Image (cartoon, rainbow, N blue to C red; front, top):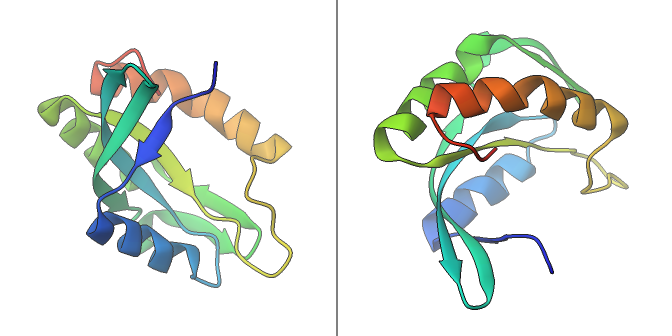
Length: 124
């Protein structure tokens, strides 16, 4: 069985594509609705909430540090609209790899419970 498929409307795709072109690592929270189909789970992208500039403690080409003010408001929005909150960040630059790093795995483990509790959703 394959994992969920992310489906993005054109405007949201273009927004995320622009974020991916930033020269520094950039982050935000993608809100999506989860739908089960005969082909599997689809995550339908609804909104992207970028981390505000003032919430970056560190922002470099290969490193991020973000205060909770950078994502907690998006989690509140996710709870209000019944959405799944997806932590999103880039790996910019030539030769970058679009897969989680060991550091990303640690950050995911650290964020997972907060995202689940704050959105009142079992999924992260």
